[in-house]
Image (cartoon, rainbow, N blue to C red; front, top):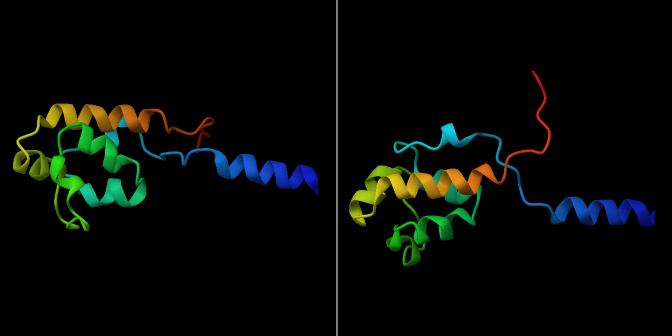
Length: 98
C-alpha cells in the first residue's frame, strides 16, 4: 500500500507532458489553447513579450498568437521560440510507434 501511495505521489508530481512537438506551435493557433492546456505557458508568453496577458483575466478564445504579438508589438519569432522551448521540455519520455 505504501509503495502505491509513493508511486501515485511521484506520478502526480511530474509535469504534464505535451503530446505535440515544436511543429505544433503556429502563429495561427489561439493563445487560449496554450494557456488553458498548460497554465504555466501564460508566464512564458508574458516573458516573451505578450505583456497584456498579465492584465487579462480571461483570454478571448479566438485571439491568435500572431494577433496577440501584433497588439503588444512583440517579436512573433521570439514568442514562437519561447513556446517551442517550453513544450520541448514537456515531451513524453517514451514515444510509442502507432
